[in-house]
Length: 180
Image 1 (cartoon, rainbow, N blue to C red):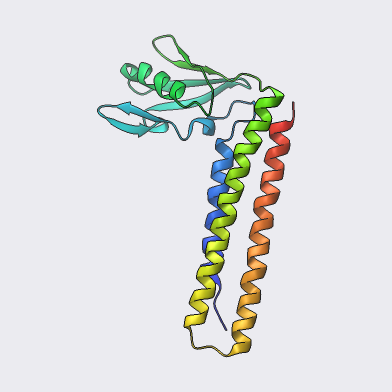
Image 2 (image 1 turned 90 degrees about the vertical axis):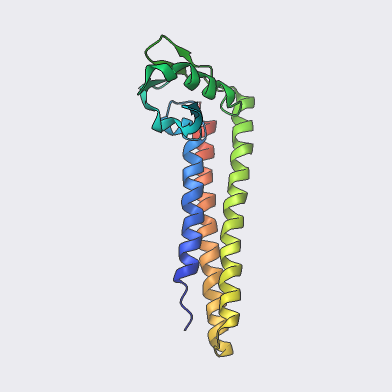
């Protein structure tokens, strides 16, 4: 019998990457993970925002960033402003950076859903690549034809399961984005 654990792991990793990407998608409410992809230029190198500051939620429409070194405040604000996909405009008072989260227009919501659907396709590609790797691995093994057929069916069933997980997660995120 063919062991599908490696295929399950690769497919599971693709779903986890998708979940991580979906936490970064803006929904109109403040969430610290929105800024997870921000890199700040400090001390001559680029570091993730969470390594140079604490990101907290002040309320549903405001993030507050408290830098570990107050000298980095301007760099943090520049890095956030530079990420055009977020469309945020931070302000600083010399001690902290405030990032107001503007409410989303219908057009912007549709644009965010469209961008998120690209992440769905990336996740599905990852799942399909895991399926192909599993099939190639199985073909290289000395197995009886009926065992290979069962293994292929099992891999196809896993592909359907993981793809439906991604689609379900996206549908939930889409509903959250489109909710006013």
